Amino acid sequence: MAFSCMTGRIAPFRLLSATVMLILVGAVLLPWEIQLQKSGKEAGFRTVALDLSLREQIGQSGFLAALSGFRSPVAAFLWIKSHIAWENTEWGRMAALFETVTTLQPHTRLYWDIAAWHMAWNASMAAEQDKNQHSEVLKQRTSSQYIDLGRDILERGIRNNPKDYYLYERLGILLRDRRKDHAGAAEAFSKAASFSDAPAYVKRFAAYEMAQVPGREREAYDRLKALYVEGEKQRLPTLLKLLGQMEEKLRIPEGERVKPRQPAVIKPSHR
Amino acid sequence: MKDSLFSTARVMAIGRNTFTELVRQKVFYFLLLFALIMIGSSSFLAKISFQGEFQMLKDVALGAMSVFLCLLAILATAMLLPRDLEERTIFTILSKPVPRYEYLLGKLLGVVMMLALSTVVMGMLFLAVLLMREQVVLAETQRSLAGSPQELAAAIAEVKRSAFTWDLIPGMAILLVKSVLLASLTLFISTFATSGIFAILVSACAYFIGHLQVTAREYWLSGMGMHWWTRLFTALIALIFPDLQAFNLTDDIVAGVHLPMDVFWQTVALGGVYASVYYALACFLFQNREL
Image 1 (cartoon, rainbow over the protein chains, first blue to last red):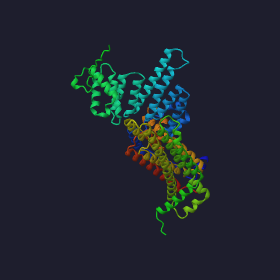
Image 2 (spheres, rainbow over the protein chains, first blue to last red):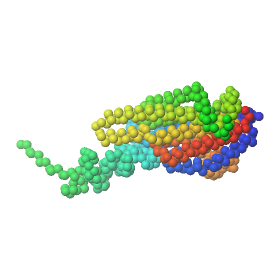
Image 3 (cartoon, rainbow over the protein chains, first blue to last red):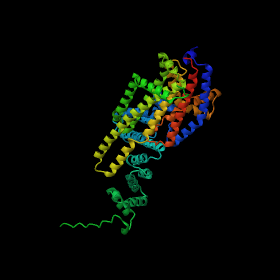
């Protein structure tokens, strides 16, 4: 009785027939849906798995919103919350929010970049200057952990966006500036430079970092020379300086140098 | 006048009338106003976040469009039949005579016209806000990096990459397709529901279940360690409900993922097939319904 009140005056058999037809149509369309999902994943869509761990991070309503096709706005909302957490210097809360935002929107390079910047620079510097921590060792350890967290964020970002030069470049900058890891930075910049849409300066950065790595002077020299040959746009003061240093270290013959050795200047003695 | 089996003129007349009724409703204006305010204010919300201005703008604007279109599709369609039954206008129409399938098609057409108009209006506002912001940011970038041509070129390329992309157009089209599918589904539900509230609630449930359909389908097809009743349940979910996650492409489009045209057209075709199936089932149920 209650069901017929809700469903109006339609014969139950007709309703059942409609349900069966719906199931049959669903069975016919099933292979198409599966194929479409596969095609979407190959193109980079529908790669985010909305599982229970995410539900714990963003709560019930956020999870429902993300599930209902509002993943991007939920990520944007949490991004604003992380900005507020930054203003309050709540580094732990920021790290948790960044984890959720990058899970919701793994293909947005901005989120990975800024999250890594906050951890590897802001949070780590804040830890180094923490007035409430009297132990220098603990300050340095916490600072180092934040830098490692920033690096981990970028590496995860790269795994989610393997064809994007930008995150490789940011990783190179992190390794150069925060870890003084010139070999790692050179490798990251080289990887970034291998993409066709990478800016020209990335190739220079790779060569600059290579020049700082002991034992790889030859490789650095070859790269710097190749850049020099490209033309005036690449012949910046840093490149010329490093090229000269490599030529000295490798004892490149005079005729092959691009930066001739300066003659020794004999200063007149004053009597 | 000889009655034909199908008359485009009759369908269009009902469609135009439905469209006119819907756009005159207060709920339409409130929802549209809300969506337009969200889209317009997304530019200001973007300033709250550190960088990612265009990301925020696109997230909020497309999110508002999606909410509005889905809500409108369900709310507008769910009230069509109950209102006509209550006001007895349905008897006047059907006694013309207008076949019931033409009546339903006209109603659906009216809703689709309203959804299409809303998509165009919101889409144009969104693109206008996006393009205006892009020009402002480009001008600021040129002012601040005037002395470094290489950095300026890279910064301009980055701004253009982050702002308008052509993928946003098919993205908005997919939002329309999803809303048309929901409208058709709601029409099907309303043919066996006597009250509009019931149709709205069931449609809303179908909306959420549709987004879980892919999870149910994967569980069913994997079949690992499940009891037979669990398999049956997940199978029914997978077969009865449409995969609405297939229409959630704007999240990744906003993130910069390129939408291949074959995926776009397949998604549109799937939405069209579902809408047609629900319309056909609605006709099947409505044909013998006692009014």
